[in-house]
Length: 81
Figure 1 (cartoon, rainbow, N blue to C red):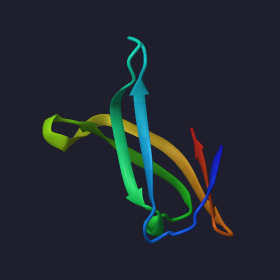
Figure 2 (cartoon, rainbow, N blue to C red):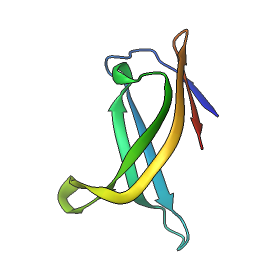
Figure 3 (cartoon, rainbow, N blue to C red):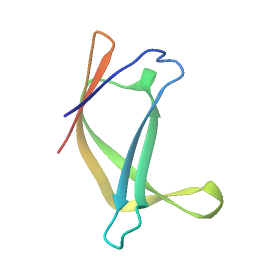
Figure 4 (cartoon, helix red, strand yellow):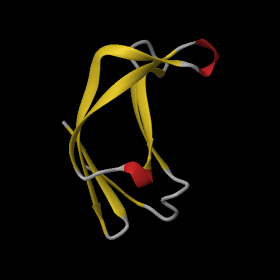
């Protein structure tokens, strides 16, 4: 479980990144970013996007994370299954 404190929710983002370190470099193979203010508590399937050239992203086929998000007294808790 990861927990972090939210100080300015209207400016903060939560980013999920999946990295491949099998070849020694840590390439991002999928990611998803959302504003802290839009987080709803509970279980969610987070669909990952694959980085492309020029800062664009494409939907990854069948790639998602199953996460539990919780918010309590200014702290966000994340469990990734």
